[in-house]
Amino acid sequence: MEEDLNWELIVIGGGPAGMTAAIYGARYGLKTLLLESRVLGGAQATSPGIENYPGFIFIVGLDLANRMKEQVKKCGANIKEITEVKKITEDGENQQFILATRRGDYRAKSIVIATGGGHRKLHVPGEDHLTGRGVSYCATCDGPIFREKIVAVVGGGNTAVTETLYLSELASKTYLIHRRDELRAEKAVQDLLFKTDVEIIWNHVVEEFRGDDLLSTVVIKDVKTGNIRNLEVDAAFVALGSDPESRIAKEIGIVMNDKGEILTDAYQATSVEGVFAAGDVVDSLKQIAVSVGQGAIAADSAYAYIRSVKKGPR
Image (cartoon, rainbow, N blue to C red; front, side, top):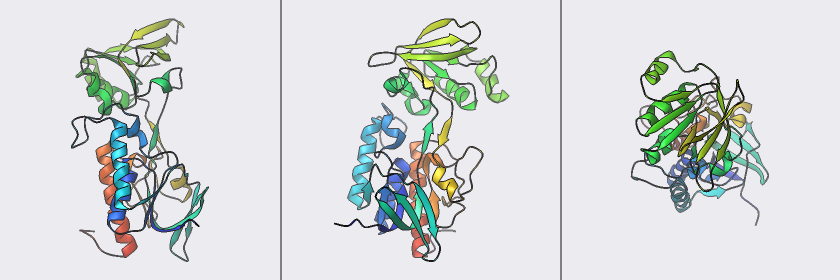
């Protein structure tokens, strides 16, 4: 059977924002397709436990992702995993967007870009193996799991210091590992940090994460002397920021900030008419609850655009 390449709404990205947009698009009666370059779930699927998503006191990230996936299917949206969108072009004559993939060129009247962002990694031995097993990239997501435990944060910017402050109120002992002899965070945030009992390990970099099934040791090196030290911890939070996956958005001229995050208005509309964006790829708080809300708004706005209806106080 020849695949249907013509759709009303195409959502790019299968994380919380993308799946929510697909759910709402389908429920609005739009012919909706969800394209994901890998498998559905997004970054949430790697979390060993989520405690800040309303309705769940605790849920494993993969379980939450699978529940969302089942809901997308139940609502009638079509899903294509392992399908990367290589390029988007505008067909002005037909008021459509053309999305080039390995399966062919899909056409859509409107698009929601929910491609997320990738956490910056250290690229050291043990990092990939122990991600979700003590190595984390989100203190807000995973911090409460390590209450009264020993934790370390890696980084020196606002994100790292803010997460260190948060963890210091949960953990029994908190380290901050920074490769320089001064922090890059804003002075006001630093002042708060220096009032805590956090132990800052200056001029050190992480060489390796060790542990069998769970993280047990962070191997660090003094950048001045070359001395190696083993730091016994229960968790390590890599807080180096994230890189939004916004290449395809940039190629069609969507306005972004200096971090490469997509700028949207209150209705998740981008600078290109008919294109909306949601989730970690946009300039906003990186949380599942936020992504879900933005996905719903983006789909609602796409529906209004496609059907040319006025919804709400616009």
